[in-house]
Amino acid sequence: MDVQRIPAREGNYNLKDYEKTRQNFSWDEVKKNFSWNETGKVNMAYEAVDRHAADPNKKDRVALYYSSPDREEEVTFGQLSKQSNKFANVLKKYDVKKGDRVFLFMQRSPEFYNAFFGILKLGAIAGPLFEAFMEQAVRDRLQDSEASVLITTPDLLYRVPQEDLPDLKKIILVGDHNESSDKYIDYKKEMAEASAELAIEWVDLEDGMLIHYTSGSTGKPKGVYHVHNAMIQHYATAKWVLDLKDNDVYWCTADPGWVTGTSYGIFAPWLLGVSNVVRGGRFTPDDWYGTLAKYKVTVWYTAPTALRKLVSAGEEAVKRHDLSSLRHLMSVGEPLNPEVVSWGLKAFDLRIHDTWWMTETGAQLIVNFPSQEIRPGSMGKPIPGIEATIVDNEGNELPPNQMGNLAIKEGWPAMMRTIWNRPEKFESYFINGWYVSGDSAYKDEDGYFWFQGRLDDVINTSGERVGPFEVESKLIEHDAVAEAGVIGKPDPERGEIIKAFITLNDGYEKSDELLEDIRQFVKTGLAGHAAPREMEIRDSIPKTRSGKIMRRLLKSWELGLPTGDTSTLEE
Ligand code: PRX
Picture 1: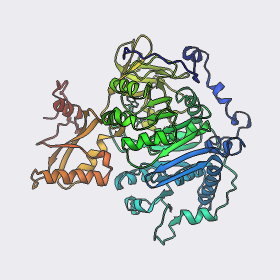
Picture 2: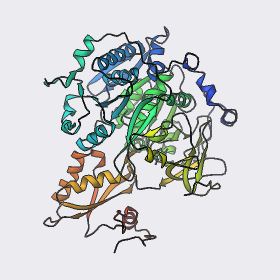
Picture 3: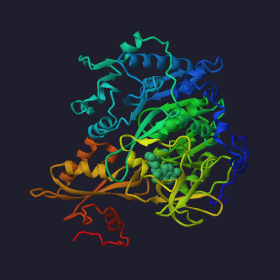
Picture 4: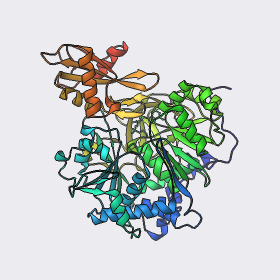
């Protein structure tokens, strides 16, 4: 078969005719699927949970198939509805109100989902943090959001710098602990006492629901602010792109600390009332194949970095498991290598559908539909209702096949509504009515989009977005480090790895121990995935005359590429 073009297969898809749907499309039609369209009563938690709990045919359906190496549990929509009511009542007791920021810093577990929907049910704003974050990362996010309540587990508590968090009033601990101060609330005890009856807070579609922090090339992580209105697009893409049907068993491997883990690990499947698999714990190929087989997963959404590891594990590993239930595969987060797509055809006899979007976009924008030809290496085409193009630096549209900045006509349902506390940052994403993504890409004559790279210095390592500034800032906190410049270096398995160039303070000698100590410092202070895999000590770091680190130049040196314009380089 020509791997340049993989035709759509015969099948009963939710989106049959892309072109026709696109032409006649209006988001108002999608809104008709929601009861609020008539009642005016809006809340994501109602649509994703309570509505199914109230439906005699869905109440006892398993919403969550949870498993981790040491725990297994099934939770029905009816149970999730009650448990999240209880959690909302716990929060209410401690004065949480609409608009308050309540953060979650814990592993995936059934308690996480109870808490998450409990927050939304009060109209409060949820902020899920990835459990791998260390002190600095937790501090930055809780300070910026002025979160008043944190839900966490006792083992992670040491990474919460409470002395630096004056707004943080209460900490809800999930799990056994010995804390006695009245700052701490015991999850188990409070849940046992809480009522399962709740008058849910009806909100406005434009009211806040979620903040996800994400990295840019400069400054601290940005709090990307999402509202309940996003559900319109989560619902639509759950049908067209995830192709979910009533009896599907769906698994999205992403952690809810990342946007994929909320938009597509929580909202999309549950808006459609589909059973959702959640697997905690670390990745191993056999474990993942085992999860697919055990729950007879039909629709699977994962990432290139995981798929590349599965490729390395070989086809034998696939054959050890019965994966016959699988019918639809998708990928997100980084470029999906054409070799992985052809491997997927061999190993699973299925096409892998690449999808493109960002934390800021809130939902999928450019995708490969089940009903369309796939051109491996391409992210596909914009979903109905989305206008995408390539623009130059002034926001002018470029013709097909010309590389530029991938841009989306502003105003889609799931678009972020602001950057928390930084409205000017939010404004800076838009030119001439286009949301400018910062990804370079081109569009071919047939309307397929092809990703080329990031235009800024943001690093994508194993699908995780890392801001070089954050890593540099941490590096220079180490006593030995004077200056630091951090870049992404291409890597076959991880996409990119983090490489740090540093200069040492007087009195420090280069040694392997010192480098390892610096690496550990970042790892334990910020996050494991933010620690440089490679480090190089230099006499100086190239900077512009205004003192900005010239990461572009470091990268050119590293890759042996021409250095381009260096006229702003400091002497
Ligand atoms: O560079 C693009 C890359 O990931 C960035 C967004 O990262 P994040 O906000 O963490 O969201 C990831 C999951 C939604 C984009 O600017 N990216 C995302 N999807 C793809 C991709 N790069 C290539 N191909 C994709 N399909």
